[in-house]
Image 1 (cartoon, helix red, strand yellow):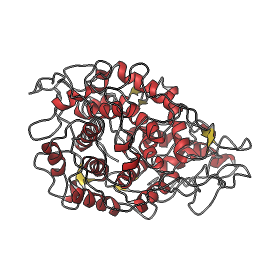
Image 2 (cartoon, one colour):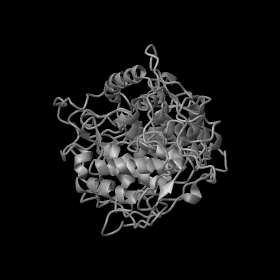
Image 3 (cartoon, one colour):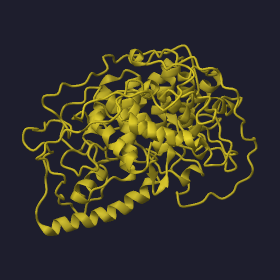
Image 4 (cartoon, one colour):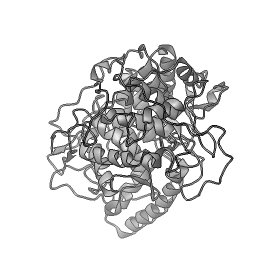
Length: 537
């Protein structure tokens, strides 16, 4: 998936784009952690087209940090060159409207939307969490365990290419909230954002304010039950409202230019709506103007709108769909966008990006949109694709539960065997995929009722902790193969045996060494390419 990043945002982020794969949409019990005795989780019961709700609000996905900015921005090691002074002064936080709680969301997920009390809470960040199961084979819960471990290992502030990445950290928080678990880690990570909101919204510079980052923080505040008018002394709600231009676009205030995009616009609409703040007709109209003739939405916004389907981007479309459904008033346009996403979904359930091919990030986002729109069959297919890329019991414990970016990434970790370890692209794709796996679209995410700690994967004690390196064809191009994955949909895992996935490979030394060599080369390529994969924030 290809989500753009602002010039400043590129310092802290890499590409990859926000949330997906699901137990709650009826994922078959054939995942890497399948439990033959476990009953499947519930799935959406309706295939109805999205219904409109009464209110409308802007929903940018990325704030000042430019989470939804193009992947062609400078790499994290490059300092942005000074640009002209912004034409608009940094918006001073306006008095935030008193939140009244999220308005009811129409559609098949309305009953699952938990209204948060206005004014937030005092004391510890995040709602009180309860105890949950200690082990699980649920794909969503074990993916949450993976993210929980990644947060703990980085001091609760995830990194991309060695740089702190608050946008990715925010994605992980929303993912844990969606899964209904891991709140000890989610609260600790939220506290990092509360302690330094300007470090995210302006990279430490109060004069720099990025709409996408502010919008994502608003969604974090709502999900975690924090007063959006006092997010660590930062008025997230008022600041976002101050970033709306007369034409309805939520724009950056930056000396480096305006990198606001459809991700940020969508996050803004969702966040405002959920905070109980008004969403202007202009903000909704500006988002709708970015819809292309074929139903998809362009990523890089333009006042002229979209006139050609060549500009349509599935990641941006998935975010826009969720915003349209949340705020209502555009049922026809949302339906057209869902049709566009369905046309990009292959037989494996994976959704293809024009620039990145079939991958978990794009599929995860599309899965969220299918859930929000009641497209049950497509949501279930997306979950199948995502669970097939999930690292199972045959992999080292450090990566179990994570969702690989694509088939090439999965195969690379498999070939690495005991040397497989967490990588940036897997952290991002897991965060993106988890909302779909949990059956929770972005507009319904809440930490309310979530458990404190995610369960560990239910692997038997006899399960190997590593996967033998598989023989690799040195002539392979490494291109993603749609539909291939960690476990065949038609093959169930016999938990009574070893509890691990069926493995292929050899004990011969030469193929093993060759596999390790290719992993090293592949790792370098993945590091370089990660800066071209959608980073939401």
